[in-house]
Length: 88
Image 1: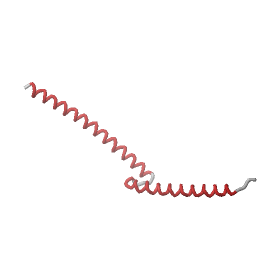
Image 2: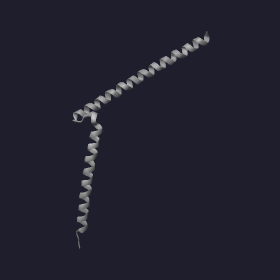
Image 3: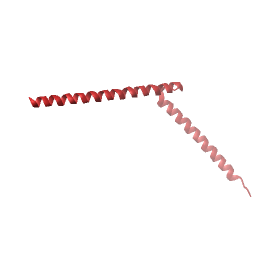
């Protein structure tokens, strides 16, 4: 009987640990959902659809790359002009 009692106590302790773990994970999930909603709201405030973030990021990367190419071209042109100036 003692063996059964100890097994029962072990399983009850295990159950209690799992309950605590479950509650902690529920809390983390609730916090993550709250934070996600905050971020989605911030996106909407900036007129960005949070469901299309991948598309928005792609557009921004394209615009950035285009701007960088323009900067490089402008700097190359300036460098060429400066090299052509003779300061004797």
